Amino acid sequence: MVWKTAILTASDKGARGEREDTSAQVIRELVEEELGGEIVEYRIVPDEQDEIIAALIEMTDYFQANLVLTTGGTELAARDVTPEATRRIIEREVPGMAEAMRMSAMQKNPAAMLFRGVVGIRGRTLIVNLPGTPKGVHENLAAIMGQLPEALLMVTGQFRL
Image (cartoon, rainbow, N blue to C red; front, side, top):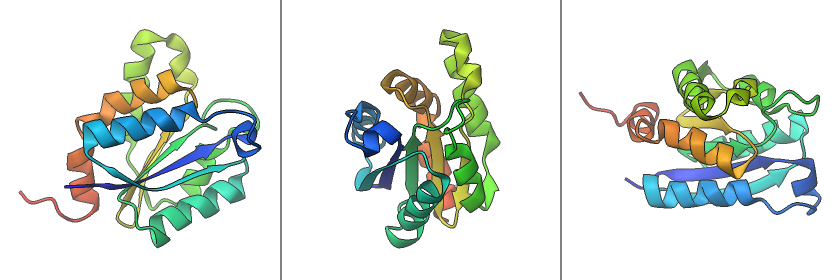
């Protein structure tokens, strides 16, 4: 199965073109090589809740991505609002996946406990918040990669017992 995947980066500097989006590059590589997914949309928005919400809604409802992976805006700074934006548009949370990412990352770096990312479902799309660094993206996505296909089958209604 080829999973339609969208990548959303929340970064003020990235949106202004002042920083290369290396975290999204890591996501793209992992999705294409490990998950066998296809990137159907990629966007960088500033750390503004309304812009994050609009992009997430478009990626889920218009592009009908099976999976939306966000990067950035998940720590403690005042402008880190990706989890709040995600919670405003999802119908249900998937706390076990977010907990698994935190637990796995904390084994390598205790500061990972400051990661506030959430995982949730909107319609038939799974949305996963990832950290804003390439290393954080890799560690967190690797922690759930083994369960992503099964989760996507369930979310899209294709799971059969």
